[in-house]
Amino acid sequence: MRGDLRRARRFAAVSALAGVGLGVALFLDPYRWARGFGWPREPETDVGLYFGRCLGALALAASFQGARAALDPEEHRTYYPFAEVTGWLLAAAHTRGLIEGRQPPIEHVEIVAWLGMAVGARRWAPSNRWVPLPVSREAVAQRCPR
Image 1 (cartoon, one colour):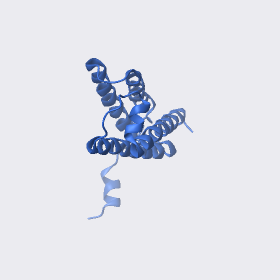
Image 2 (cartoon, rainbow, N blue to C red; image 1 turned 45 degrees about the vertical axis):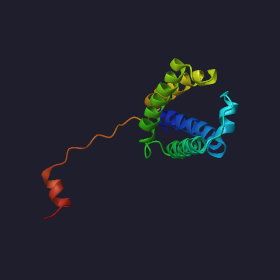
Image 3 (cartoon, rainbow, N blue to C red; image 1 turned 120 degrees about the vertical axis):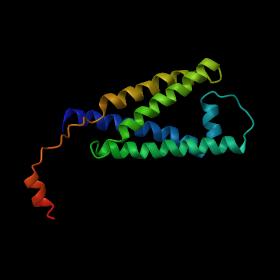
Image 4 (cartoon, helix red, strand yellow; image 1 turned 180 degrees about the horizontal axis):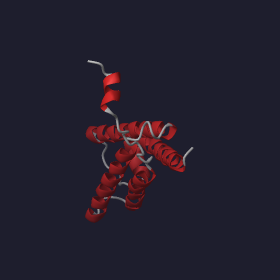
């Protein structure tokens, strides 16, 4: 196996496993997850429960795609740009929370983790080595008769 595919598999597998850990906890009990991460105890609302479960479901869906990419990085190469954009956006969301002072300290640490995910997805994505071969008119005519 080429070295870049080994690294692509490893990145996808690690991100999938991390996403499962985050996703299951959020999907099953978002308020318990929040308390575990140091968020203050607040009244549980239906909308908070709904958004927490939705975020957990998205994390699980992303983990499923990461697992598929870990098995066959070239076939599922679209996972890597998705993971990169996810990392940048979540780093931005956590940075905003840091600036506004509206999140517990553990969320500040996650900024580095999300940036690492974005950089890792870019760095360890399977290289795009596919180059179209020149095709003659005769070859096209043989394959596509009129």
